[in-house]
Length: 261
Image (tube, rainbow, N blue to C red; front, side, top):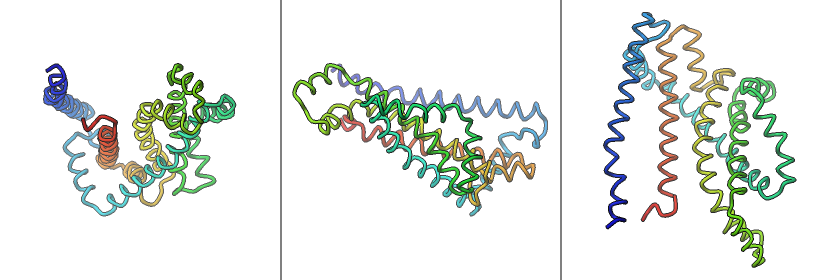
């Protein structure tokens, strides 16, 4: 009986949670409207209504779809390159102190370098099209590596001793001991890396303005003093990033061991 009650409890709280989400969204829109009235000019701070109208007009244009697809491809390319390499580097750093020492200067430099500086330097060598992807890689790679390394270091020491006592090979130890240990850290790193990747890619697009991109749309709206358009491009980017984040969270829940039970 206890198990059934525990299993049913999350569903009971779904509706109240959704209600609180609705209230939070409504309060945000209300404060947004008050702020637009306070500034008194759409040129400075447009209200929700003109931005929503501009957003619908924007979404229906072919140029927007092309920009959205291009930015999405850049984000996915950054993730596809940085996640496996970051995990591999994190495993190496967690299992071998020499690897950790070798990689630590690289991580320190990336952590201390402003994102805008990285974008400008990459732009000199790679051009507008490749800069957002490479910048995203540089920002996401250390995050995934650090998360994976933390998972390796937090592995149960008793299990490590047991695998050593029974002289289990390295490949089997990695597969059966370390991989299950790092999975929560890798999944947490994936969530934070995806949102970071969107931010870095869009920031790079705003700065270097590739031909088709959400960031270039923002920059053009700002240059033409179309503040509702700038807000609309920003809202579209936030919605796109939230959808991908939601899809990733859903995939993680479905694929997590025991999810089907």
